[in-house]
Amino acid sequence: MSNLPTIAWIGLGIMGSPMSENLIKAGYSVTGFTLERDKLDRLAAAGGTAAGSIAEAVRDADVIVTMVPASPQVEAIAYGENGILANARSGALLIDMSSITPQTSVDLAKNAAEKGIRVLDAPVSGGEAGAIEAVLSIMVGGEQADFDEAKPLLDALGKTIVLCGPHGSGQTVKAANQLIVAVNIQACAEAVVFLEKSGVDLAAALDVLNGGLAGSTVLTR
Image (tube, rainbow, N blue to C red; front, side, top):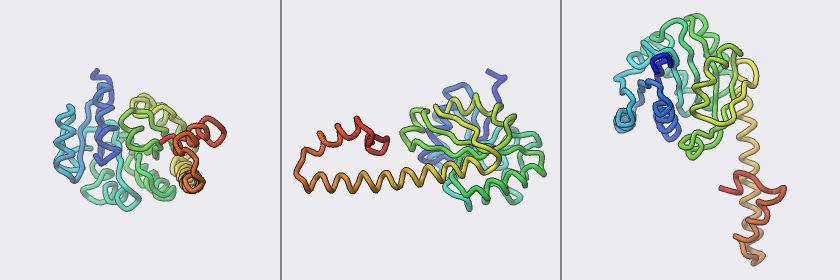
């Protein structure tokens, strides 16, 4: 198994914890860092290594994966003397799986390139269940060669993995994903209210709707 790249994982939240554990199950060596001590204990219990800082986690990693809430957190962990770019080795691959603005991803790739670090933006769709079951949809922005290198690792995390274009493209597709999901949730909610007020059997109604063109992941969930 030693030919697999060594992984640093930054951000062990609702998505990050099960995702990092799926990499461990796939045979990868994972060193993680996050702010919550119990999440580090969980990683160690799953067979990973808990680091005391970002610098310690990324120092010897071939691939660094980040999964944090939003752009400010990505900037906080990437930049500064204790951040990823100052401490990762030249030639490392940084895969940011957070959902952030496309511009943040473009800027990160540009700044990382000056340090010899390659970047992919790779936000995901599928929620906690998708993370646990390793069936996430992963939309990627960056260079083809870097995507090809990352693909085996991403295969351990998701089911639908697509390079969507240059840096920032993954985030742009993720934004479109959120737009569709939000409208879908709104429509499903209004349909449920309409059905309940009409006195029909709600479970039966949703069952038949989901079998037709109105069917969706939102409706299923």
